[in-house]
Image (cartoon, rainbow, N blue to C red):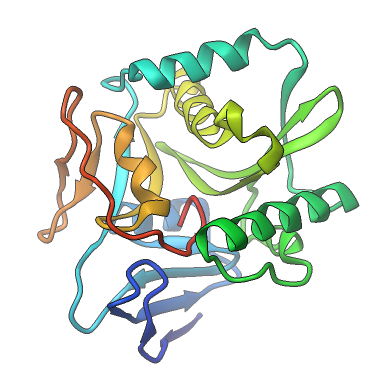
Length: 250
């Protein structure tokens, strides 16, 4: 395993802050090992697990949804029902794949986010980076009449599902496929009997990550290493101050 701490750099979540990430790169990382790290606030991208160790900011909060307690909001319920009623929208779950359709959709999504939200331009072959994983990862493929419109990556762990990343066709954004994907993950967790869905880091003030706190009730990892209730049903959402430049499931 290779361990290192990246040099401080401008934060992609909060532009007025500096971030610094610790990385552990382990090509032999197991599901059980990662499940333990996930509970302690780490995230994963490929064989690298990471967590923030920022010089002066502690705004990154690991957020998870307790499946049995979760109840959708009215808006989430409408999104779920409208997409469920659409017989042309299909979900297939399988191993990660690479195709021209994947790459085209990834590039289209990131061009839109770059234009509308100031995200960095898409990396060459960025969609292919999700193929290399130390253990089996699920790819959630959404199609409309066989046209690829959304792709998500999910780790199925012994006692949790963890959302890694999701991209979709901006022309279909009226469907709220990002919200629908999280609802589908929560429903799958309920079906297979795992108690939590992990949504990555919530950062107060980052508009791109604000949606995570809308899945309620939810929990965040406290400073003492214990998970505590964060946002409950019926709480008014906190207004996000910044646009943010990050992916939907960091």
